[in-house]
Image 1 (cartoon, rainbow, N blue to C red):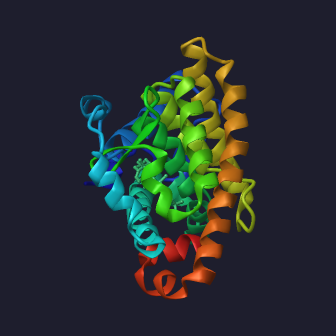
Image 2: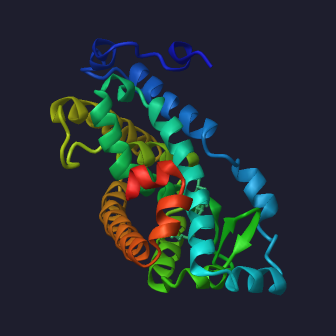
Length: 264
Ligand code: CLR
């Protein structure tokens, strides 16, 4: 698709001409982010809704449980990398992102793409039976037993349940995802000021839609979730390091290159 046609900001000047923000351009900014989210979520909510009672059979669950840790880690890393790739696409269409230096874009993706995947996880979560969409069906925590990192899995499921409880709209999920990604506090950014300006525009966008829907109180909630996201991703990295030490061969030859690049 033609990038310039998709997002209306061709230069930082265009973006910064949003100051002072006229409602029209802030609506445009939100619309771009929402469109980018919609085009990169893999599944629409209606599709997921229709699938939400498709559960794994006992035999299928046993098959996952009898995989070796190696096999299951490899399998999950492929699924996660796939999801990360969609987040990279999403990022590229956040107004202002492509105008950051290549290094800063990579820094933001390295630190934030997994966090956005976890934000997105709430769309794929069924709170009625605590299952998540995985490999075409809904899976409970027991499906991931062979990974031997029950604490991480439980923490991820808890986080998804908590996010579901907020009952965010697709718009709110889109803007929140953008804010998680465009974070000027990430270590080793080259041009923090520039990231900060993009961050402020996204922040204004989120504030704007929350205000319009009379849900300003959500902002505080969302800021708290950001701290939880940090700790979840730290836990993921720890588990990955532990796994890499025990199974260097799988980690080096079987993990997808992007997964290694981002997390290893
Ligand atoms: C999250 C939202 C994405 C699509 C997607 C793809 C892969 C899924 C992931 C979602 C949720 C979490 C998930 C993952 C595959 C494996 C992982 C089910 C639905 C589980 C929790 C296991 C994680 C184990 C690693 C940390 C080793 O748009």
